[in-house]
Image (tube, rainbow, N blue to C red; front, side, top):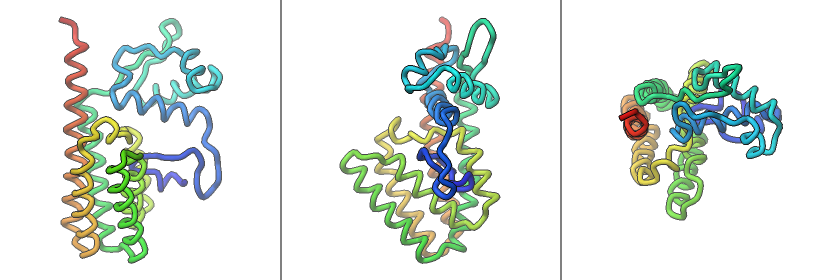
Length: 235
């Protein structure tokens, strides 16, 4: 898939149009970033390069390269003697990241309501049905949810906005529903409201529903991280 089609969550090992296979560095950076953003690798956690290489079935070099990418993003600290240490992401930063995603996704939905074609709307409806079925049987909702929002982002008709979404989306964990499975029913209901707004061409409603969709996720994840921060704080 192209970079413009990645937001809000990147999925897959091969870019669809170019056929370019993602490098080990990219794959490892994505996996480690996801764990940090979800709070699975907390602040001051030491990333063992050898153990990580063994886990992912690769060599030490791409793991170190991935950590350098994360260092540039401010998620880890790489030092000569102490190795790689997680800086992490605070509850406040998580809330900020989701707020940016909410604003950008809201604009994308607003524009999509004005431009979406019947074919694009049909695809959105199909993905919504797949999400509902997956939620009932316990299948992968996260990937389908990503695809659902990607179709709406594509329908906005703005490659520039899609690139901005892709950049912002790197700092938002895509496995939200794995962390908060109880939110799936609420999300499905919100998707139905969003589809209805898109079908009616109601740009104001589409934007408001989308922003609220991300706002709920922001509050849940930031609360989770705040609790983890409090639990790891010295007495």
